Image (tube, rainbow, N blue to C red; front, top):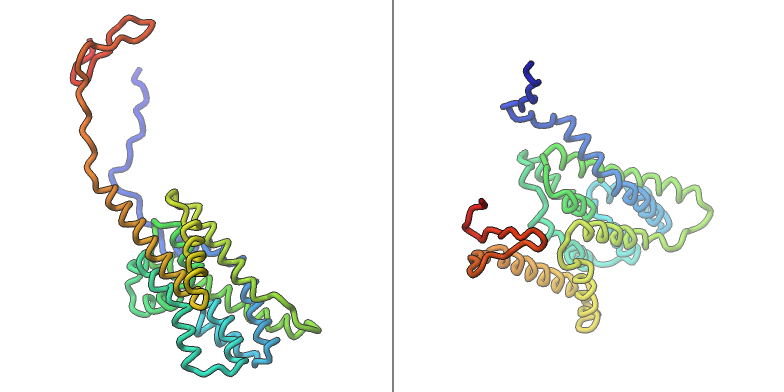
Length: 273
């Protein structure tokens, strides 16, 4: 009687996931960050109303600007009647970090010009953190679905914040700290996925040095120092990976004996008897 043969693997590779499956994966990856983005959008909508700005400012900023830190900053700048040149320079400095995001964000998978333009505009910190935590398997439908979902959380949160602010009898203090708390959580989650020099420690040292040498330009100097340190670490890691491995040294001399068995262990290059 013949033994049952093992199942043969299919010679054809598994078909790629469908577009719908990739969209669902992108939405699923956005859920964790959405739990933080939606309340942050609520805080932004409430700040808009409490600052005395028209209610339509919240959805307008959320759809067109879509940058949490900048939108919260624009509220205070608009209330203070800040000149447009100052606003432009401030927005440029705050969003300058996005230049470094482009080095590792999987934008290359998006081919359609309009989709690529939207993906560049919707490159926020949360999208970058999720992409850094899942560096493989990105497709255009998955990436666009992720960014659209994050965008929707923010817009819906802003609308909900406007409604909540109308219902509350008085202002709520401390809403602006929600953005800082979200960034801390995203930084810790991203750091746990990389078994290298602790990136949080590098960023902390960069902020500490910036506080000492340029407290008035803390954000720009800290970003520059952190970027320089990360580039140096990357170059060191690449240099270490390119070094040739030493060849094994052949064993010479008497053949070692295994304790308790009395049988010689064949040396390198010898066949076992």
